[in-house]
Amino acid sequence: MSGHSKWSTIKRKKGAQDAKRSKIFSRISKEITIAVKEGGGDDPEMNTRLRTATQNAKAQNMPKDNIERAIKKGGSDDENYQAVSFEGYGPGGVAIFVDCLTDNNNRTVSAVRAIFTKRGGSLGKHGSLNFLFDQKGVFTIPKEGIDPEAFELDIIDAGVEEIEDEGDILMLYCPIEAFGDVQSKLEEMNITPENAELQRIPNNTTKVEVDTAKKILDMIEAFEDDDDVQNVYHNMEMTDEIMKAVNE
Image (cartoon, rainbow, N blue to C red; front, top):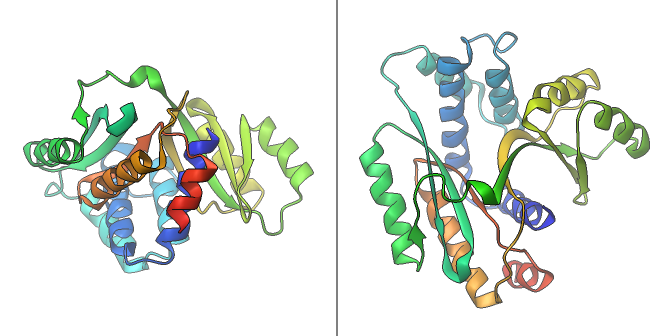
């Protein structure tokens, strides 16, 4: 799991520095819209999925007008996003999972297949990689002001299985069924996550050379640049050598 969180941390640091904020806003806006349509209305207090999405939006400093516009779209029949997932392999046999929200499935299938093919990978059948990933709740929270020992005891009681220290943040992992309990506990403790979502976590990792790793990371970036893509997951082991190469 640590290899996956290392890449998440890299993306978090990059995201604060580069020009991809509009892509982040677009992804969160779609999630807000879907949350309204499928989660039970436009009241965050009654709609847990919407509450999570709006909290993530605020943590990314998304303007209030953008949030309200996304909520309004959720109540309209004009926005009909469909959740679709794609599975395949990249160079070096690294497994890659691509989660999308799209209003045109044919366009999305074509774009995802093209990225796999052009970058030395292959698109697999639906469900072919399920055995390689577990879905877990993942919370990214700031460490500032937290008493580590007291916090760990309280949050583990709420259902957290693993806590990883990433410097200025903590990564919390819990089973899907404990997601709501952990979220409620953090609210009770007046702790606002930088991000909270369900993620696909690899249950084993694949080691590759640095050159192959760079190809995989280029592929992931190409997926993330596509407007229909919400999240990309992989099972590549983020070794110290790869981390050094990525940060150069």
